[in-house]
Amino acid sequence: MIQSMTGFGKAFLQLPNKKISVEIKSLNSKGLDLNVRTPSVYREMELQIRNRVSQHLERGKIDFSLYIEASGEETSTKVNVPIVNGYIKQLQGVLPGGDLTELTKMAVRMPDALKTEREELDPNEWSAISGVIDEALERIANFRKDEGVSLETDFRLRIANIRLYMNEALAMDSDRIAKIKERLRTAIDELKVNVDENRFEQELIFYLEKLDITEEKTRLTNHLDYFLETMEKEEALGRKLGFITQEIGREINTMGSKSNHAEMQKKVVMMKDELEKIKEQVLNVL
Image 1 (cartoon, rainbow, N blue to C red):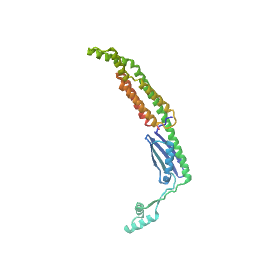
Image 2: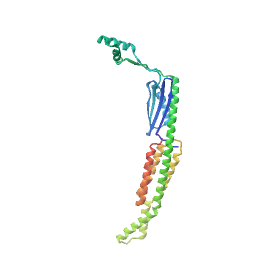
Image 3: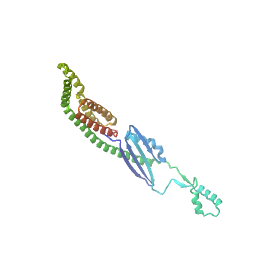
Image 4: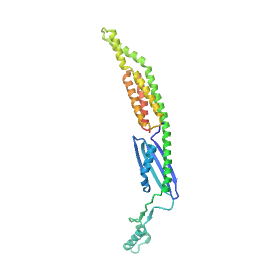
């Protein structure tokens, strides 16, 4: 089953004095490119977060963000009272009779007037946050699956189109061969020389064998079938589908170089166009 590497998941947790938000965004990438942003109080859990995200999402350029929004009266930043009082006394010495309110405003803007108390990680709080992370991971996984369904539908349409254009090209094969024979016969006649008919037929057969596309048709059909079969598997498929598209492209190119027929080459161009659209989308497959 196909999954996209593109996805988004978000979950919330309301605590008595804060709101926790977890956001996970994912784009396509050759491997796992994980960026984790967390407040400093949860920094020690970053390795655990990385392990959990990598196990669930496997590949992609992933941005994990954990936000805190204070909703209570408590704050980790407090006024450093002794320092502020010291600044006020110094300012009173510089500005005798100065207004206390104005001196206080000046003092709180001085260095170290505010101090931030480092919060300690609460194990119970982290346990609740872990549940929110799992919820966000589940949502982005579901998003990827939904996107995968759309990709699979598009792939099936493109593969069917390639098969259709291939069969339309093959339907012209008898006309192509007839025109090649006629063209060669006309060229011989214009030379006005005596030709050994048996030798001419042998050379003609040898020439037509080089232009025969039966093997390419068989291999291309097999590759198209294999692409569809591979999509049904449960494992990560992106790289494998990419390799199959390379083989499909190789057979289409060979058919184009052998066709030597304007209308067949138009069908080959249409097959190439469908294949390029598949290749673009395969880059998004997990």
